[in-house]
Image (tube, rainbow, N blue to C red; front, side, top):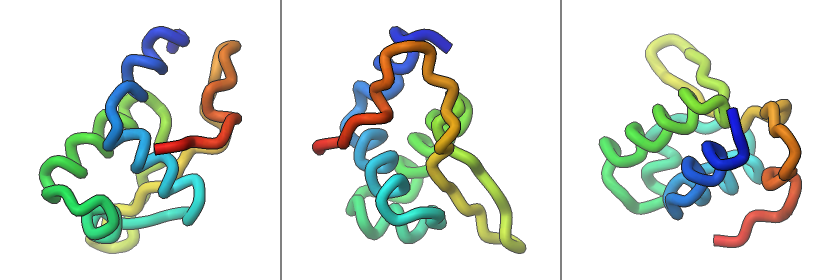
Length: 88
């Protein structure tokens, strides 16, 4: 994980809104994130997958429900971008 890769992932406004929401409110399911962002469920699922694969989110299951939370221990390598307030 490099700063360039981090910035590339965070360059999408929807991803930034997801991270901001999860940092502020804690663990949420896909449906609640979809309702908040007012975008389609497939779009939210795509962005959640990208963020999870890049290590920004933790994914867990509660029965059939998939829950997402912001990974507070994200291994930032220098820039500290996730330590500043997020404005969307």
